[in-house]
Length: 208
Image 1 (cartoon, helix red, strand yellow):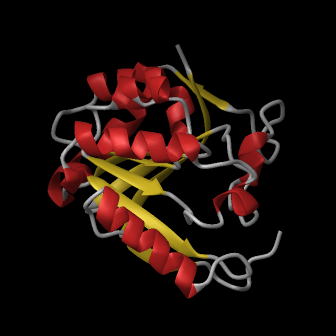
Image 2 (tube, rainbow, N blue to C red; image 1 turned 90 degrees about the vertical axis):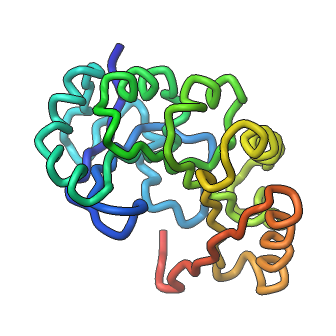
């Protein structure tokens, strides 16, 4: 078993939860977002920037991560799985989590728009679920697909893990959603998930 990995970003602070973290970025995603910063993740038959794709076994990845062990332990940080859509490689991620130091924080950044069978392997591995739901109102026009799986999974997740492990993010996207759209999405999360989502704004200078 190997992970199909785009990159590994070390010594991150303030971007992926508490403490110092390492972000493991995986290939492939079911969404095609207009302003995707990792659009190359879809190019599954090519290399990234001329560099061969990284294929770590779970143990090889753990050995690599151990070099920052002291930073994780001193800061309350740990490892973060992102992408692309990391849940497409959930069985691999689960294996990595079983080998990781129990004191490392384990987080996942996901759209949650995958079949539930891709969520189950890591359901109880994560200390935090950082979920980008885009916007309930303009989801398909922005991502190219509907949000049925995301909504179903979010409702299931709400009943499976403590609410303090669920961190939902809603972006303001220039040219796609309005303040009214955002407030509707925020209210839906409050009413149906019972958490207070984070709202943030995409920069208007982003171009494809």
